[in-house]
Length: 251
Ligand code: F6R
Image 1: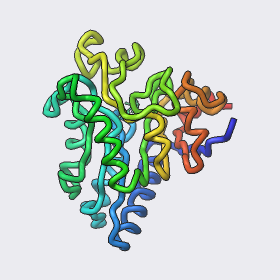
Image 2: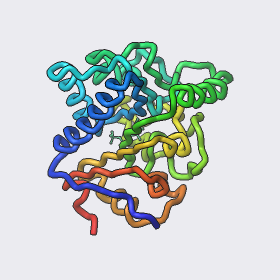
Image 3: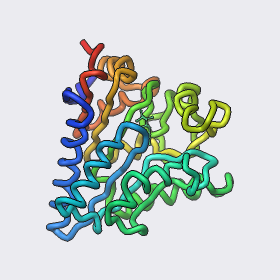
């Protein structure tokens, strides 16, 4: 079992500032070289403060997103992009509407495709990441079941962008957003574990006491499909940031 470097911070805001500063430094360095920055982005509660800080850096400190290319991890299936429950909506609301990433450089899995078009879409998504030069930085949250993206327990190390079935835990946790567990989509399109592990840098953020139990398991279990986040042990440049609440039961 390899050790994944992890940093314990006082609170979620401190993590947001640290990680936003790292992303901003990367974007500035790339901009100075006239190169693009390819970001893999996550949705959910965890990155909201981080996106708020990136928006602040854009507004107050002139952080220029014009060369940034983004690829989101996942989207529910089926899901219309203009639905308020979609990850399209989430990303525009929390980040894209407030910074200058050109629309043509934003990529989010399309939950509105007919089922028969999904496989080709997923292959093209992988290709676009490659054509952009690969992911420079991948941001991750973690599910209470150890999922990264929507790579639920059982997801293979070599999995790629694909249609996945959502775990019961994931659907239960999303029930509030959909007005009941029965209304949560049963499937999603998600980047795979292999797609994520190819990023040159990975940062996983876990905040709040609900993540304490899974974080203990992630840090003390060998890499396996049972807890997909353990696959980060196989990456040479991954860091986990936890706040004191998510760290509470770590030994
Ligand atoms: C979201 C995603 C998920 C979330 C995870 C944690 O794009 O890929 O893996 O990061 O479910 O969600 P929150 O942050 O809401 O606890």
